[in-house]
Length: 122
Image (cartoon, rainbow, N blue to C red; front, side, top):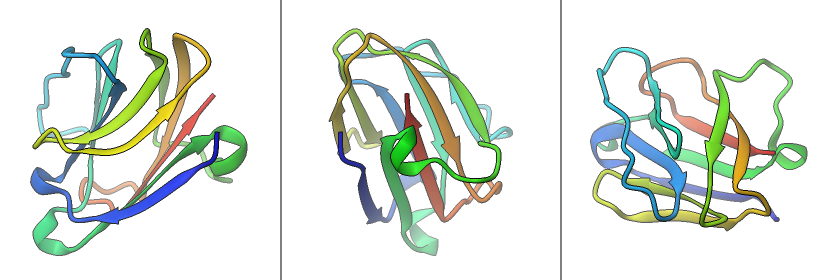
C-alpha cells in the first residue's frame, strides 16, 4: 500500500474513515473531535470556509509520527477496503487492506479545526 495525500476544503469540517460498505455512523456531539463506532471513525478538521485540510492515509511505516497519536482504536473492515468520505458522501481516498480488523492511529494538530489529519493503518 502506498500512502496518499490530498488537500481539500471539507464541508461541515468532518471526515469519515470507514469500511467501504458501512452505514454504522458515530454520534457526533461536537465536543471531542474524534468519534467512533466499530466500522467508522469521524474526525473533525478545518472548516471549508477557513481553507483546506491536508489528509494523509497510509501504513504505519509510511505515515507514523514521532508524537503520540490523537486517537487510536481497532476498525472493523469486512470489505477489506478503507475509505475516507465527507459528510456529502464524497469519496476522498480509498485503499485496500489485507485484514478485516485494522488498528488505526490518527494524528492531528490537536484542535477541532485541525489543518491536517494523518491516518496510519496497521
